[in-house]
Length: 126
Image 1 (cartoon, helix red, strand yellow):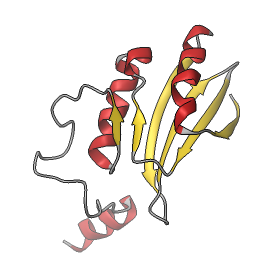
Image 2 (cartoon, rainbow, N blue to C red; image 1 turned 135 degrees about the vertical axis):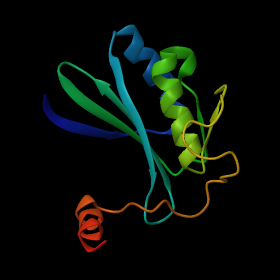
Image 3 (cartoon, helix red, strand yellow; image 1 turned 45 degrees about the horizontal axis):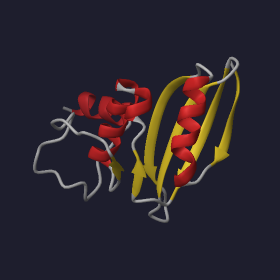
Image 4 (cartoon, rainbow, N blue to C red; image 1 turned 180 degrees about the horizontal axis):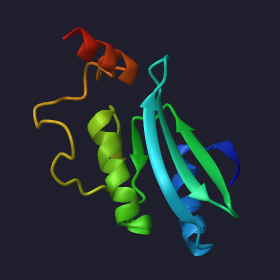
């Protein structure tokens, strides 16, 4: 695949973009989300376009429209996971049960990630 391309989009462009991609038979590869250092929600939509991954980035929103009515399960799992891990809501998403976290997790705090080499050091010491 060629080098990824990132395009900034607004909340209002998400649905028309997804509809266009589906009409053109473009594959939704994955959706990801994270909170940047300034506390902004960043949601990215990755589509395969002509053997290239093109990333559309929406920044700073607390609510976004769901694209599950366009991309079905491909979008639903991603949207549910993002909702579970971040302070964001996808309007129109029919959520199921939690995917990973306990029911009482409210999305606050930080999930600790330990690099594998640190875990291996702990094994040697123990």
